[in-house]
Image 1: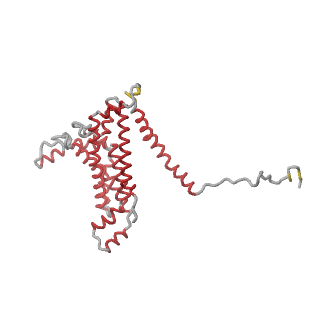
Image 2: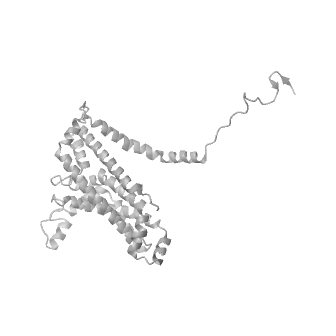
Image 3: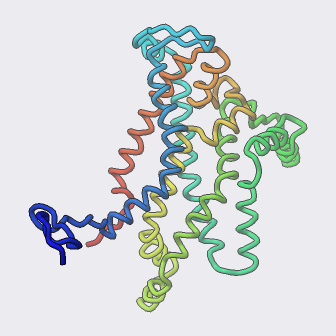
Length: 320
């Protein structure tokens, strides 16, 4: 073997200070984290682009006078001062509160009730599930137009049904005292099938052994519901209440129904806050004022969801 000053030819040179450090492989947990973030990254990007950025833009616009034609003037908190003395803002806020207080419990009760009625696997229950979920397959604008025609005075199906039982002169969309209740009824009819399926999934996850053990102890059907079904549905109930609360406050369904059926009338009795924000922005061109109201709506939603998380402990089970 040929030997030189640098050592024998063909021998591998060792680095100074010992062996070269090997690349540290990622642990299984870190690989799972990376894979998880890669899977949710499209949703995160969409959430930031279509929810986060508009929220920041609305907050930014709340401090400016924006007319939609290029003129942007800084006005400080003038939009918020205007909001504080705007009677229509406070009225729309009260209408929103009533709408949320009526809609969220109604969706919870109807969704859970329908799920309990059709939870058994049978051909009849499969047909009923499809029927209750069918409104979700139709555009909400189409639903609003159909209900508007059905609720029209004198010629609508509802008016004729009232006349058939001796009740005349009732306008369920033209009377300010009952128009909001009509919107709530239509909203419940449209959404109850969706929440029924969510509750149905929660009911099917409850092991049958719990019910068998309860019956062996002499529990009645009512006791099985309150001692077994309802406590074990706590995560599902939390999800239903949270989703319906966010949808009711932000008006993701209410806007289409109200704008098509009543446009906030009569006498602003169905004008929830999201409808008033739309009117200020796209009918009156007060984009800055609309942005300020949207920011207040977001703050209200964050406060409500925060209180809801605290009161329900995030829908987690409690172990004694």
